[in-house]
Length: 57
Length: 161
Image (tube, rainbow over all chains, first blue to last red; front, side, top):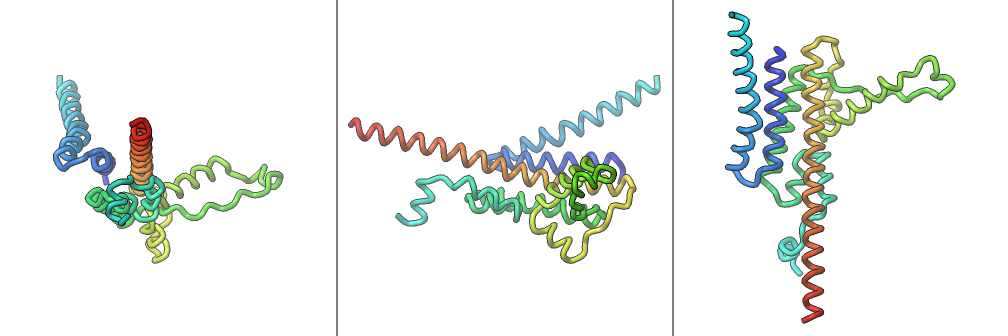
C-alpha cells in the first residue's frame, strides 16, 4: 500500500465520520463530505500538477 | 406517563453516549438517532475489518512498570505510555477488537512501514469512535441544559401568572 492510498483512506475515514456526526440530513451529509474529502483531494491533484509543470520548466 | 410521551418531553441522558465505546453507534441508537448509529457502526467496522485483514498489529497488553528503584535501569516510561495510548485507541473500537484478540486475529507488529500504516488506521478508527461518543455526549448535555432552562422559565412564568 502506497503512502498515497494511506492518505486517501485516512481522509475518507475522518471525513465520513465528521460528516456523519455533523449532518442533520442526507443533503447536509453530502455537502459536508464533499467539502471535507473532495476539496483536499482536488488541492492535492492541483498542487502535484503545478509542481510537475514547474519541474518541466 | 408512558415511555413514548416521556421520550418526547425529555431529552436522552448524555451518559447513554458511553455505550458507543463498547458497540460503535450504540449511543446514537439509544438516543434515537438510528440512521447515524448504523452509519457509525458501518464506518468503524469496515475500518476495523479492513485494517485487520491488512495485517494491522493489535497492541499487546502493556507490561506493568517495575518498582521505582528496580526500574531505574530497566523501565521505559515513554514507551509504556505510548503503548498504553495505542491500546486505549484500539480498544475504543469496541467489542470487535476484543473479538479479534479472542479469536486469534491479532498479529504482532512486523516492523514494515506498510504494517505501521494499517496499524495507524486501526488506531484512527478507535479515536474517531471516541470522538463520536464525546460529540454525542456533548450534544445531549447541551440539549438537557436547554430543556432544563426552558422548563425553569416555564415554571417561573406559571408562578407569576
